Image (cartoon, rainbow, N blue to C red; front, top):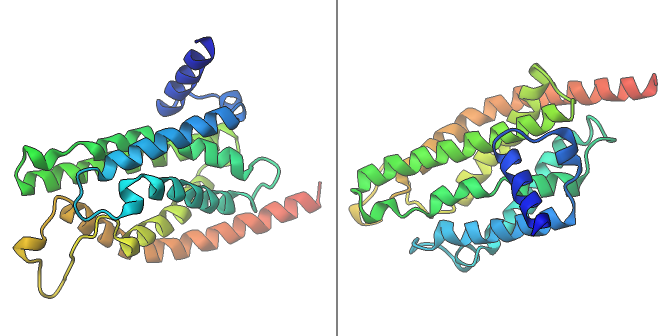
Length: 230
């Protein structure tokens, strides 16, 4: 019971930006297993009432696969800058423990709202979850003492740009999006507005990723120079 209580307290500190460096460094296999279980449950909840969802989404397996891919992207971003501090498993465990906010997606707002209102609410949910997780990632980096200022911006926006582009390409909610011809009434869904914003953000992400990429290369080169002179 004490072990479970300590895990819940750690989780609460992590999600409320109160985790300390030793909290992050203490993340291990137990936290990873629990994080994957929560990710799986939340993944099922996200698509339980979506008639367009495929089997991977309905079973929550797609969400579990996603966190492995996301952790790899984040690890590939920071590992070349400071090889000594970050491990893939450590980042994966952290990412799984940021899963709970996505439970907002499981709220079937379209059941008691108009389609327009449900679109707006799902857009709010998208913004809350995205900003929350981005803030947690920045907090994780800052607790490790690796980044500040412009470097934090680069480490946060470079993977974020790829995530926006990937989410639009995958179109996880199977939104019918036709710029020229519009959307037929039969094809409208409660995710239309959220997908439209994602599509716009993916366009903005292209130039941002170029600048962030240049900054990332500069950080990698600086890190290598520093290690050679140690």
